[in-house]
Every structure is written in C-alpha cells, then in structure tokens.
Length: 262
Image (tube, rainbow, N blue to C red; front, side):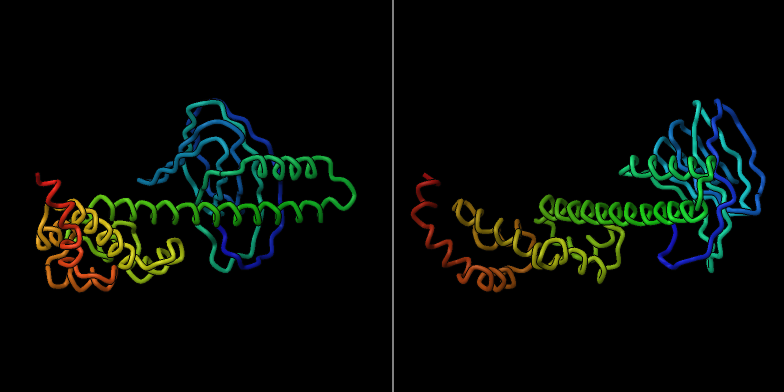
C-alpha cells in the first residue's frame, strides 16, 4: 500500500461516517484518504474497475480520484483525510486486515484525539498515524509471507500428484506459482531447505524404491512410472541417491518378489 520510504504528512480531519445502503458519487478531492471499515459491504466502481470492500478492510484513496461507491448494507467507517509528500503517490488500494483489533484501537484513538484535542494532540495524532502505517506494513508483509508458504505448498502438492509425469519441471512449477524460475528456486529453497529439483528427484526416487520393493515391475517400467524418460538416466540418479543400482536393489528383493508373485 505504502512503500517504506518516509514522507511528510499533515492530518486534515478524522471522521466517523455512517451510511445506509446507497449509490454515491465521490468527486475528486485535493487530499488523500485512509479508511478503516468497521462494518458494512461496499463496491468501488471506476470505469471497468471494481474493488469490493468488507468489514475490517483498510483502504487508501489517493487525491484526485473520483469514483462511484455502491453499498448493499449499512456501513460505518473511520476515515483520515491527509496531505502527503509522496514521491510516487500510491494508487487506490485495499487489503483485508488479519489483526483488525489493532486497527480498531488505533483508528478509534486517533478519532478521539482529533475530537477532544488534548494538550499536545498534534504530536499524538502524528504518532498514531505512524503507528497505523507501521501496522499496515507489518500485516501486509505477514500476509505476503503466508501467501508464499501457500504457493510453495501448492507446488509440493503438484509434485506429489504428478511425479510420474516426465514433463513436470521446475519451470512449469514456477509458472503455475506465478513466479520466474530463479525466484521460485530461491523461495522454495528458503521454505523447504532443498531446491525444487532436488525435492522432485527425491520423491521420485522414493516412489521408485516402493515400486521396486513391490517386485511387480522391471527397472524400465519403474523408470517410466517414476517420471524418467530414460532408464539409463534413472539408474544413474537412483545410484547417486541410494548408493545402489535399481537392478541390484531389485535382485536384493528377489525373495519378496517371488513370494508376492505366487
């Protein structure tokens, strides 16, 4: 929503606004707005763009932005109007708070300070506003981290479900996750402790071991069922991983294989 660079700001007003279900047009204004939605649902409409808003959303509306807003329920928001010296003004954006109590407390305190204006209230308001910005950054970083974990776990699930598919590759997994291959490799390694290629190879070899232990398949067939296009390459990788060749591993299971076939 905001980058980490400091910027000068001046709070112009802090208001609690309540509306019934309605359709409204909001003209462009010469100041920014930061809004916490206490309750109610709404939809911001500008041209073909639509942003759905719900309880516990934090929304930034830049100055000069005009839009229509449609509310389907009663709504209550606390809005901060302010000026700021952004080098690159953010565009309209909104995110759903994962710890809404923190925002409820900060916005309510800021509103109380604005309405009552105790001694030193300007400094108190500035401090609360900065605390809100800090909370926004903290929660958004945590949400991004959760998103990364989810995407990596989704990639792991794809590997397990498709390990016999020889076309499954790191590049295809990166594309599915929405990342470039180099970045995907880095975040996968950070989360799993191994590279995606190493992880995929490991689960393929473990799958191959289970097939060989069954005694029902030849080395060539195990190679195919484990996602390898070449039995020779499969044997090389298998030996490098387990310390044995598939053939010797299979022969070592000969008695079990015979009994199972009987």
